[in-house]
Length: 388
Image 1 (spheres, rainbow, N blue to C red):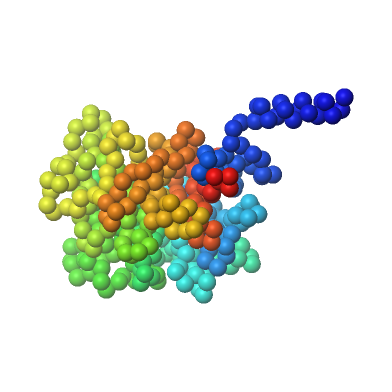
Image 2: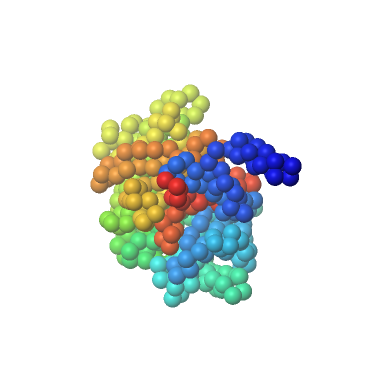
């Protein structure tokens, strides 16, 4: 009788277990026949950025918008809080945002943060960039110093940017949103709606395009951006690619050019939220602005956040592809590339209700990691399905 009952229970489990789901002791792994998806951590509060630590195969730093940074152990599926984080203004879309590590991190242990913070006047905010030295024995960030403030301060709680990427010369690129003041993106005396470039110590690179201009801030590298929340360096060309939010449609992918005007709001595929009327001319009609290499129509889903080029051995078919998250439309876009030409190949992770904030590839394992922007959110891993 015992064996009969045991067999019936096993049969019942096999019939009613959801297809493609198996337990691993920590979570449920879901497979689509090509890749599998599992949640490494849960219970994150609006996570925003993640970076894998060179020389530490399973370790990463992860930020949460309310003002927390954690050291994550992927293998152990644990996170440990890091103290010493600068005070942030967790208001609206602001808070603790992106995280990056110095290209020579294994020697200098330098960590870079972008975040919204309040100025001397109450209820006025700006995007800040700071760096500190991580002390992993004591789980703290030491010697923190502010390198850049994207002035002027504004009462708006929106459009802070803000991604961080280093180039091959150890110069740091920083995205700053227009702070919902459209035409500030065209004002070269303001740091809103710009891509900024500084040296790793906060000084201004001598190659910056407006260094000698009396009417432009020397930290500006490019302008005419609305709110860029994805940025990545091309692994072969070294060019900096970026995605940014439009309004009603018109979200873009751009390849940065020194001193270039990327159009917002004078040349854009975006339309007004209120009545869908034109905001500016179309980018091809303005010879003074740079056209996006890809843009989303309103019906195609948006806005984008997070960006990564795939390099690794885990997914040979995806080598060189570009991945971009989608917030409102809740999917991960995979693009195939032909030089500077993009072809939207696939939507991944649809129908899960995940607002995808960031996407990164771990060089150690070649797996793709996703941050979901929700008040109770997971860190997600995409890895090959061993049964494929």
